[in-house]
Length: 273
Image (cartoon, rainbow, N blue to C red; front, side, top):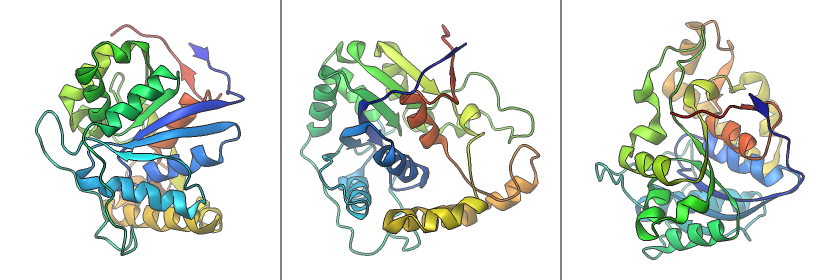
């Protein structure tokens, strides 16, 4: 078991399915505010018609960071060809008037390839569809990549947490062929497994501070409250001793980004699976 030190500076590429669970947007906000971190590029995965890319751009606009380049990536699961649409039609999550911003075919692969060549850390907080397409288009490219991904299932959740099983691992289960491709090809792969990230919580007591953090913070707080209500997370929390009574959301993706940046609260263990 080793402890990775926090980086004084880092350049990262974020690959995200932002637009549904607000923990993606919270992860983006955290990266934007992390001292010494530059988000050099963002690609959106399982993004039908650039709807998720538009949500990312909206968040960047609220944060005053429109200079960060955003490219829409693959639209559907490589495994099932299913489409996962973001919550853009629900005004509790996103305001009206966010127009989709599609990108030319292959644009996300080109951006990812450039980031890998430049030695950026690729943080994948959605299904691994874009990364799998990169390896298909440019065999061997992922062998030189440092990838930190949210997902995977090794040990079960700790006592007191929901006794979920691997089918709850959305990022892997939505596109299993993509996950297999990346696991086999990535030269340096770090996983933040869901049973571990279940221990990271946004709580009711955090919401006033989040609401007060400007337009982006207010958006994240509103989305998180809607997510809590939609998933009945308050009832889930009352049923499991390992969850706080004032649970609002699980922060899987912020934990993954923190691990990528060397957060000292995370222990990194090397395993051969």
